[in-house]
Image (cartoon, rainbow, N blue to C red; front, side):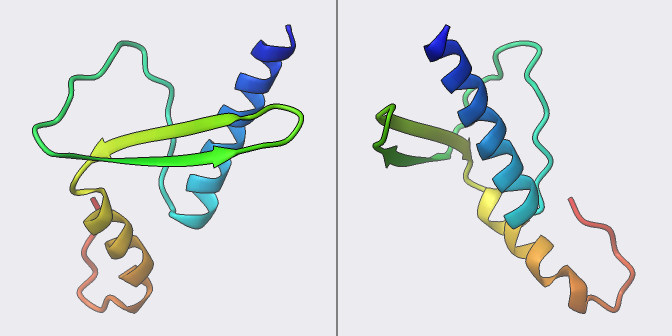
Length: 82
């Protein structure tokens, strides 16, 4: 039960971080997504009462999407974000 609780807590924490810091909505996957042709893999290692690593894989266009969201406050063309 402790491992399941830890996985839930970690998943919720990462989702909350992405939503608050990168302005990205995190939605549950109902089925396994396909692997994009070009992707980036980020790994964050952690230690504490539970140790491990979190890996997040995303389409390589994620950087551009995050950049647009950070720069969106200065837009004057009224365009929407991806």
